[in-house]
Length: 356
Image (cartoon, rainbow, N blue to C red; front, side):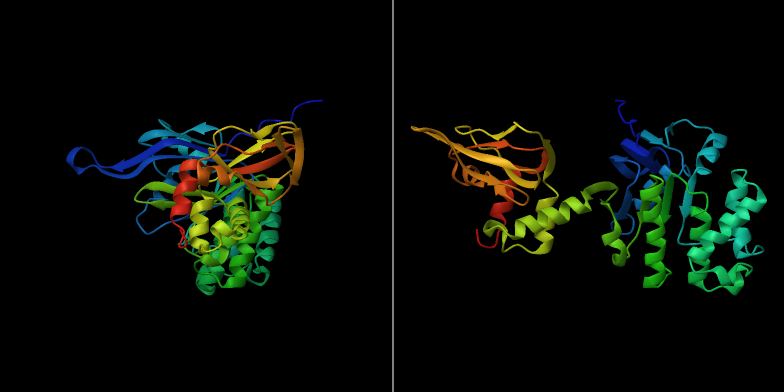
């Protein structure tokens, strides 16, 4: 049986820095940022104004030259590229900016068709694709209207259609829903999610729109030019739900639980794997996301199974709290995923409890 093809990252940044100016006028705005964006992910970037979000987005979009560090976009190393090579990469990316930058002399459908022409799509096919996506965005009755006859929200939707009409593998968006009402904003995000699911596209979106945070697969927060947190949303929500049911963490706020969730690492396991060995010194706390484990205690009369645990089960905290060795062996009965918190982070989380 052939192995499935390896999915290469859409974006891979390693210790990416950026600065403007030279010498005493040098101003560094990005510091050692590393991030990998695989196909099929919708990533939302948050953070205060001036934190470096848009600068990072423009580097990934080949709109600026990389000054320091490594950046690969759509399989292309970005350092040292010529202007013409950067333009070729930009043509493979869908851009959505807060300022829609439409051509005022062209109609809505003609603005969208500009994208199809750039990649050589025949005019009839380009017009069909443009019409389809404008209809999807609720602008079927405005195809032949020029921008000055459209509202701000309608102009933004034309810009979104222009970015998505070619179904690019990478979409970069800066505040794409800022000018849209809730319904229109959700429609735009729905289209973006559709591309990640059906085409394996990756979306990186800078936004302050809290209405769409729950649509993200991943949230990256930037502060002072650095990625401060990088959270897989489904994982964080699941961990918070598990922690809320544990007495040890029941007094925490949602924000506090979220901070703890960021510290957990995902670890796959397989039948027969030993997650905890009786008699060992405790160093990790476990939450089960999927799979089942067997809890076995060995005493003078031999080994006996005392419990079988599944999704949402927590174990390993007693040894971390008391300093005692592990009191049981926990072995995987099936394949699954455990969320694991190291002793240092576990101790810090417990000490922060209002009940500690």
